[in-house]
Length: 354
Image (tube, rainbow, N blue to C red):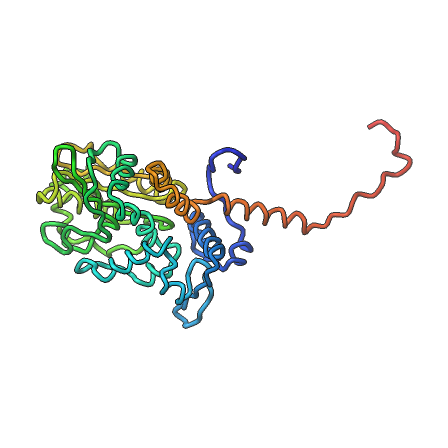
């Protein structure tokens, strides 16, 4: 449906190729959402006055990509919303957990990546734990969060540990909180932006999942093959990682949260599909929460961090800019017609009734 003034955006447009090419973001295999998101990031980079980066293909050729920063801008931390966030990201890279997989190129130069998004989203919470408590209570009201104690990035409670998932599965962000009764809990969070849940996956999950899935009680059919392939396998792995942490006794309770844009149809459909495999969570089981990125940004503003919320909205969710650009492109097509006015009607027809 086409957008109506004053109404919420129902769906994002199919961006015309010439508009994408004009901003160096025409990528053949982009999904509808990813094309819009890539263009939005190019617009943001241009407004910031940041130089465009380049991508080198397997053939050795380089081409400009509007959703990348050049090496100078990347090195200066311009993929982050302010210098404090950039400093935090650099420290997290230096002190990353053993076995963590942090792609520095994606983190510093790829505007479209969910990795810098995770830092831009959760750095304000890391800097202000009282703010973190307000935001997390707003987006997860079913959880008893008296106070947030820690905000960790690229965290796993046990990489390759046999009593966990036995591999490198990890959360983008982990929120450690205290309940009103004094017990501690954890929310493991997977952040998505333009990804589609069809990214490269392990060729085969290790045998530990075949033990952990049935014993967890999380699934109606724990051995179903669909849980072990895209688009569900990553949600399956991280959900079980959170469950394993609770089963070992690390936390009194754990939860697994997916955080993604409302209009990323691939991820939202994947989350709905995954939910169909879940049993009703009981005592001692990890819940699955699907939270829209828009909800998080709104909660951040409501909690008092209005400047941070606006900066996040403007960079990642300001789809009105994309729609305006598409509409302008459509108007240009009409103007290119240069239609001459119709010739005057013959005198013999003037005055005759139709």
